[in-house]
Each structure stands twice: as structure tokens, then as C-alpha cells.
Amino acid sequence: MTRADDLRAILRRFNQQRVVVYGDLVADEFCYGRSNRVSREAPVLILEHTSSEIRPGGGANSLSNLADLGAKAIAVGIVGDDENGRKVLSQLDRRGVDLEGVITIPGYRTQTKTRILAGAPHTVSQQVVRIDRGEPPPKDSTLFLQLSRRLSAAAERTDGLLIADYGSGIIRPDIAAPIVSRIRDAKGIVTIDSRHALSDFGGCTAATPNQEEAEELLGEPLSDGAGTLSRQGQILMEKLATDAVVLTMGSRGMALFQKGRAMETVPVFGTDEVADVTGAGDTVISTLTLGLLSGADLSGAAQLASIAAGLVVMKRGTATVTVAEIDKGLETWQPAQTQTLERRKPRD
Image 1 (cartoon, rainbow, N blue to C red):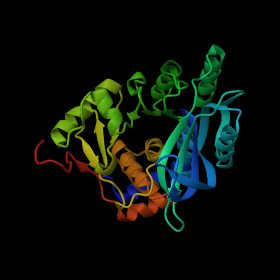
Image 2 (cartoon, one colour):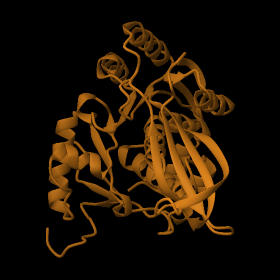
Image 3 (cartoon, one colour):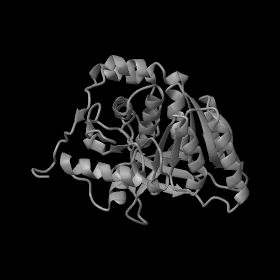
Image 4 (cartoon, helix red, strand yellow):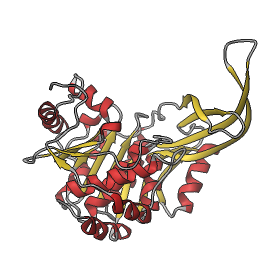
């Protein structure tokens, strides 16, 4: 069992780490409005727009999390030469993220997720709809050659690689594979989060699928029983060819599967008063990656990631956490359990 003092020692080494993020750089847009009437044209709310903001999302949120946790984050990806792309890069730059590996493409529209939030005066705004905007990457072999070269150059300066694939078509297994092999051969750490192509990125240290992604890979629902879930975790590791799988299950917490080890469950950290789960998966994989690079075993790194996730969902919008916040969270932290899982049904 990992003691809180051991985890604090790991946290103190976060600022010594360098991590490359090969990922989809997304603009998370939040549009806020007040609503006090329904349209006569259709049964929909009329919103009086009050404000808008852009925050780094997707792989850019992983970069923000790494930087705010004290690490040196290095970006490899693309954005458009548009307002949203410039705002994302500006915010990353202010955090000290290395942007030499980012390619800005004229005429390309930065991947953007627009969330419309409505609320009455003096109330908390709630998300009512999300609009995803984007386009396939340019069909230009030169672009992917440039990305490959930039990823290779960036990987020379680090022992850690985080792959954040949100399905834009930019994050390609053939580009990642030689870098994954190089870093693993050098005893480095490679983590992967992919929306629908996890099994295409083999050989990583750990994958962090959520429940929906895991069920897609398994072709069946996740079990509520520890025995069956443990077997499903072993299948996931085989399908993904990873050393470990950190399965995030929302209110059920996390399940950690490792080769030759019993399943561990990591309970949700914090209260049930969740403000916003936007980007929580980015916080999980960023903290997990830094934990492993800083000398934690998979169990310790997963528990730090759980604390970070519990803290970030208490914040609104696409958010990050800091080492100081995680350190304080350790004051009320409970260690993970081995081969246990709270059942929602009376049978396996």
C-alpha cells in the first residue's frame, strides 16, 4: 500500500519531468447566456448572450494540466491560422508550454467544441447543447512528414510521451509507433487516450479508457462484479498490448489492471457535488503520466490521478489542478483496494 508521504515525495518530482504531447489541439468554447423566456417560433429557450471564452481542450488541455502541475510540456500537433487556434496557443504559451512542434495551417479551421450554457440571474449556468466543429486534416503527405519529424525531435528531449487522440485524423499510429518503441526501449513512459482507435496504438505503458471506450473494445457492458471485471481488464490489456489499463468509470471510480497483478479499484475522491466533468480524462492521464515518470508505481500514479480528477470536476469548464491542491487532497485520501468493487446488483 502506498502511503500518503510516499505520494507527496512523488509530487515534489513533478517539476523535474518533461513530457511530449502528440495530440489533437482543440479549442473548448463556452458561450454563456441568460434565459427567461421560450421562443414563439419553436419550443426552445431564448438566450441573451452575456459572455464567451476559449480554453485549451483535448490534447491542449493535457498540455495545460502538465504545465500547471509543474512539468515542462512539449506540444506536437496542428491548429488553424484562425482566432480560436491563436487563442489556444496564446494560453499554452502563457503556461510555458513548448510550442515548437505545433504546425499552424493557413485556411484550416481549428477543432472547436462549443458549449452553450444557460442560466437565470443569480443561478449557476447549465450546459444545454454542445456543437462540435472541425474538418479532416489536409490531404498533404508533407504535413504528416513534418509532424513525424517534429515528434521525433521533441521525443529526443524527454522520457515521456502522452498521446491524446480525439479522432481528428491527425494522430496516426504509423507516426507514433517508432517513437513509442524508442521511448519504451529507453525505459521511458508512454500513455495513450484515444476515442475510437485505442487498439491501433500498441506497446504503450498504460491506456486510460473510459467506460464507453472499454465497452466498445470489449463488445459487451462492463461488469459490476469484481471477478468478471477483472477478466475484462485482462482482455483489454491483451487487446491494447499495454502494461496496464487504468479504466475510468465515473461515479464507480477507477479500476487498475496490471500484468501479473490483482485488479485494484480506486474510489472516487471528494464529494458527490460534481460541477463539471469536462476534460477530467485529460487531468487523469496527465497526472498518471507524471506520477509514473516521477517514480510512482502504477498503483500510486493511479491514486494521484484519482485525487486530481476528483478536484478538477469541482471546477467549472475545462480546468486543471496543481500540485498544491493534490497535496492538500492527500490529507483526506483513502488508499486503493485490491480485488474489490462496490456492486450495483446483488449478483455478478
